[in-house]
Length: 91
Figure 1 (cartoon, rainbow, N blue to C red):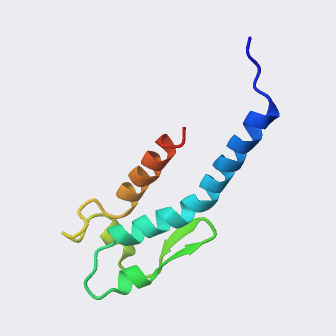
Figure 2 (cartoon, rainbow, N blue to C red; figure 1 turned 45 degrees about the vertical axis):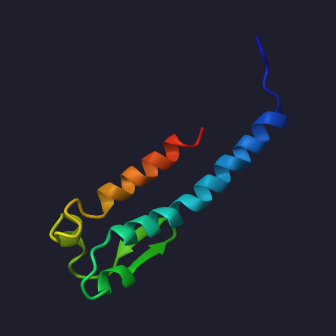
């Protein structure tokens, strides 16, 4: 049986930790990218607080349910798929 020592594990754990530190910000950027734009209010009112993306505008749920033809899938589903793709690449 082959053993894996700490010299191999620790760098990998640091890589995973850096990835997880960056992921919320990258997901926020993707969410904003997916957000439809008419006046710009939705994009500028979307914030990342801790690890939560918040749409601080009254019609956030409508946009997220595909109300706009610019984002028929909303913003959450494409953002989750973006995160899944990133996670799959972490090998």
